[in-house]
Length: 128
Image (cartoon, rainbow, N blue to C red; front, side, top):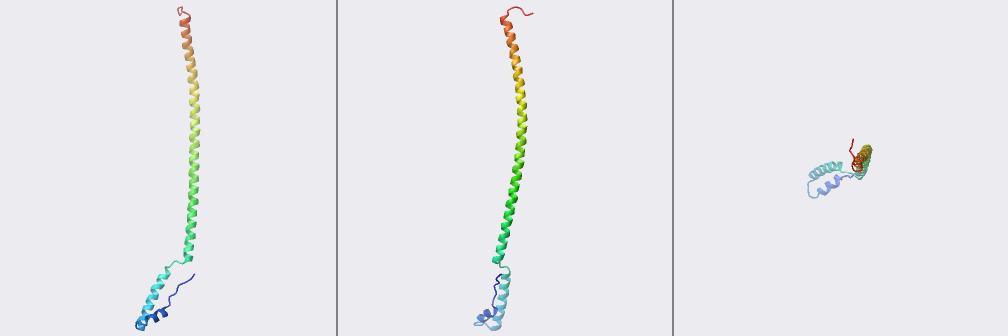
C-alpha cells in the first residue's frame, strides 16, 4: 500500500522565503498534522478493491437468497394450484354423477308421461 508523505522541511524552506523561520516551521508542522489527519481517512485502491469485492459478494448472496425465495414461493403456489385442481376434479365428478341421475330421472318421468298419454289417447276407454 502506497503511503503519501508530506515533506515538512521542503515546505518550511519554501515559507522561509517570505516568513520568519520559526513561523515557517510552525506552519509546516501544523500543515503536516492536517495533511496526516486527512491521509488517514483517504481510501486507497486496495481499500476500494476490497470494499468492491465485499459488495459484489453481498449482492451475489442476496441474489441467491432471492432466487431461492422465488423458487419456494413458486413451489407453494404450484402446490396450491394442484390442490385446487384436485378439488375441482372431485367436484366435477360429483356434478357429473348428479347429472346422470337427473338424466335417468327425467327419462323415467318422460317415459311415464308418454305412457299415460298413450293410454289416454289410444285406449279411449275408461280407466279403472
